Amino acid sequence: MPSRVPSTTENLLGLSWNDSAWIPILNPTNIMDYFSERSNPFYDRTCNNEIVKMQRLSLDQLNNMTGLEYVLLHVQEPILYVIRKQQRYSPNHVTPVADYYIIAGTVYQAPDLASVLNSRIMSAVHHLQSAFEEASSYSRYHPSKGYSWELKVSDKPVKKENSKEEPSSLFQRQRVDMLLVELTKKFPIPPAPPPPPAKTTSEVEKTEPREIKTEKADSPCMKPPPEKKPRLN
Image 1 (cartoon, one colour):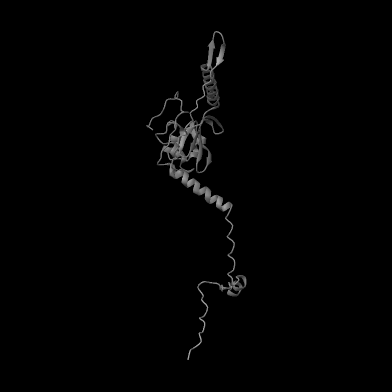
Image 2: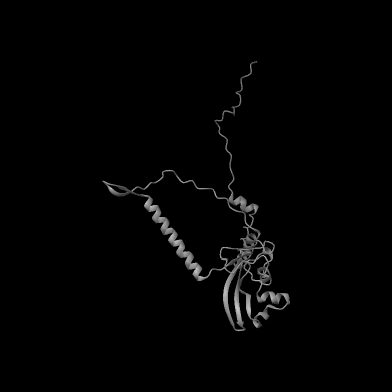
């Protein structure tokens, strides 16, 4: 995204921002530096965080200042970080302005309650209007019959498009590997049972019956011995 600071009247709920070079190394210690990148449209460079950053002070010094600031509100490693934009009036008095959540390296602005209710109401009105328009398209009027409904049902089967699965990202593969390691630690695989002892030759002879071969007397291959003829003198 271009490096720019949007006007205060611009609606940022439909925007998102990420920097692919930072995503593999994000952690709670550098997430605020990632959020304060110049190309991030959600970051206000007039905040107290910029003053602390230029003077190379600790972020704890924000409690002693007044004005606009950003703080890390919630961390769920390694995928979710929540950053709050707030107006500080004293060390113990702050007013939240907006919340931003970073999920898988992409920054979004969390919608406020009015935006959520407005979106749900507009969605419900849109679906109701679409239903009324579709229902009115089926109505017919005839002077002798009056009003009737003509519903057209197509006999053609709907073909399902073959959706191709997208390849997994490096972050997804690393996350899955980490979850598999944790599950393996919690539920270790039971050891395999020992193999049965090998049988000795004597046991094999006892268990395996010997085959006795018998030859048939009427076999055509066997001929009787020739008869002895008397010798003539």
